[in-house]
Length: 268
Image (tube, rainbow, N blue to C red):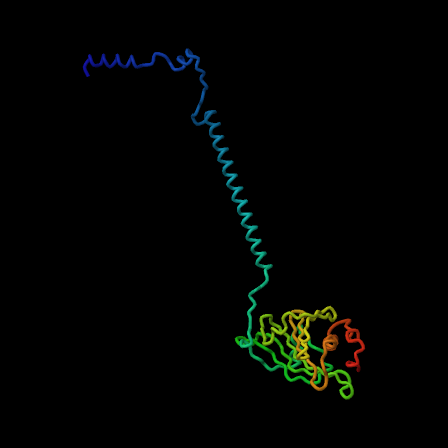
């Protein structure tokens, strides 16, 4: 650049240089200036940083609170499901049809040793054809029921005034055992309470027999009772007395006389 060029450049620079400072210009035009220091460490910077950090803290607090609340709700929901599952009845009982079972020859003594089984009064038992323990075919350690077949009971004087009945007694020890003839014990219309044990029954006029069903302890009990043809006629009015005779000895404060009244059929 020659000397002339330098002069021209100097003139341009002088014309572009501000003639007054911005503060002076603002004072002349009544512009109010607020000092702001946004440099780190400055007061304004500090206020800005504090405000920003405060907002972050609020956001963090709200996030943590939301997570805790959600966790509590989930925990309560899971607990309710667990309680519901526990309280729901167990519908997973395995069912056994007659074809799924095997009959194993047993005895009255063996049945008497079975825990909590209710047996009939044997003092008037005249004879009994058989006792079977019904077990699962796929696992004979699973006892489904005890079946006492053709039990003959003789009450009164066998020579002068016998009252003879025949009964088949089934003790179902497994609730899933569906033995043949189970439907005969559905919807029994009548009931009698013997020492607070409710026994439901139905007297069948045509067959002159009665079906009885009741629960005691953990098991269910089924009876089919009939008279002895040519010797004793079972009537509906005598059903309660027969049940009392069979089971009163097992219960406290059970009075056979109160159940049977003065029926001459059971005198002696």
